[in-house]
Image 1: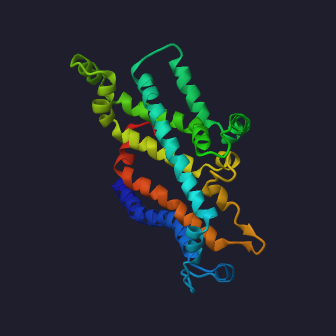
Image 2 (image 1 turned 180 degrees about the vertical axis):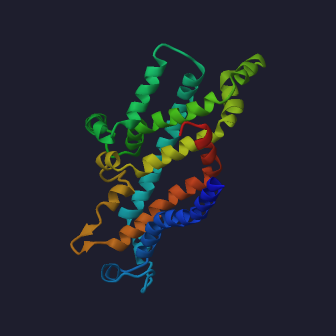
Image 3 (image 1 turned 45 degrees about the vertical axis):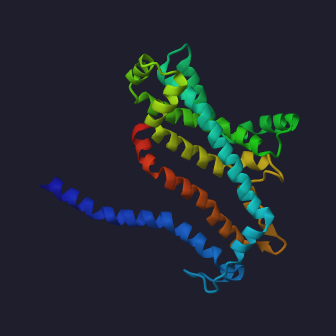
Length: 275
């Protein structure tokens, strides 16, 4: 009886904890949106829950100033390249780890994960020297290839968990039926792990989108990402808080769109994959 009473009390507090959590999660985003519609004078002088002088000037600056909107275009280009390359490389690698045993397979798999656990700063100098030599500095492909260091291990880790959940009998049955490996993989196996592909693509996109150190160091003008542009908002008149807030709001949009497309797979990915 006492345990049931304690359980009821705990259940009564759950809505409170949920509301508190939502406030902590939503308030910073709301405040950034709120700031993006205020003038810099209002941001610095008053504390208000909504703009007293509503303005779209900050968004107009971003959409009309090439130094701002080109940052979003550059980021989308190298992030898309990285996501496609990461998934393309991780799929056969994950299949090999899932279906075959070879000498040192456990050690190779662990080595892949160590690349994900290594800070990007460790790879900064080698990439800088290599790209300067072969001419990949300030290119979208250069940043996309640099981000493979930490995204491919993550994608292999996630996809291997999904592939291990697919019975091996499916592979054997397809071979008996005369399927070639490419046909089997594309028409039978890949649809079975589409949830894993969606989850892996989501994490590759997000980690590449928010990475700053490599993207900022390996670019200067032609491929400079938005994260680098946002760190250079200081002018002679001070920090342009409104434009920075508007840029932050627009930075969230691509991630929200990606989440919308893979929302049905993310929960399954946490339940079945190695996330």
